[in-house]
Length: 146
Image (cartoon, rainbow, N blue to C red; front, side, top):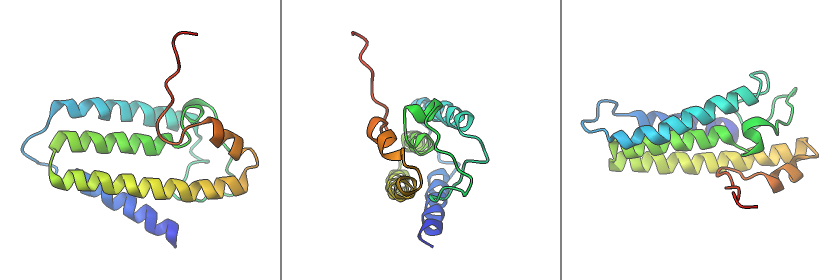
């Protein structure tokens, strides 16, 4: 039941971010995080087969642990992409409503990711090592000078 509530809250906060669609002023700088979100989401989808993906925190019965592609940089690239989309909406419309909705979505994704990780730790023996070397939402910047 908790997982269904989290998904419902996630969808509700996304809808709240998009409403009202016809807000008068749109800041063009909002397209930058939206473009980054689109690229990251596309990379995550390309890295994780559709039969493995679920909007619920519980892994599917046939799920495999994906650690390549976008998942080699982030444990939750789709959640990061949603966060970037939210940032774009917040920058774009810059209203208290959008700020509140963006913060609410961030909180929901944090709680949902923690729940998901409990299931992944229990299901996949290698998850602890993967989690130790891979950040949850924000990728590590690699040093250019070696």
